[in-house]
Length: 141
Image (tube, rainbow, N blue to C red; front, top):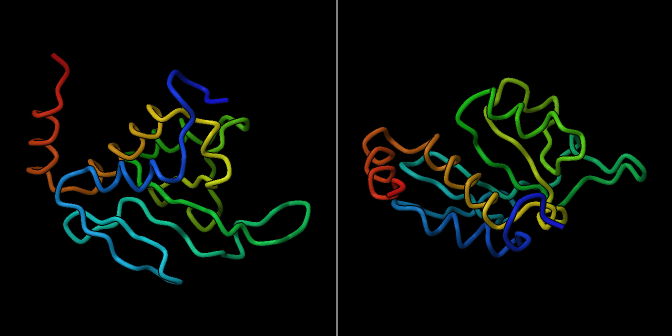
């Protein structure tokens, strides 16, 4: 069940939310996995299986990892330090402002939480002008 209010998140939501942000372009990454970009900078991408993200029981590489950029190291720690969180990182991403989640664990967060993660990812990579415009348009009343 999702950790916060709202329905559980789904893979389709990642695509919909990323495409819903302004000035987004989708590139075909390795193995034709989508890479969502703003201003030529990726903010969400579906990662191909890598040796640093493996099932601890079988040793099989995870084939469903999604990467989200985050604004700061503090934001990254807030998402990954709780061991019950579906967000994680690997040594490969040390010093990199991003977090990982397996698609198979998306339902452990809510749609609302996923929307926030995608929006923050976009804001962390968009130009200051684009980010400020989006924030003005979406400011709470």
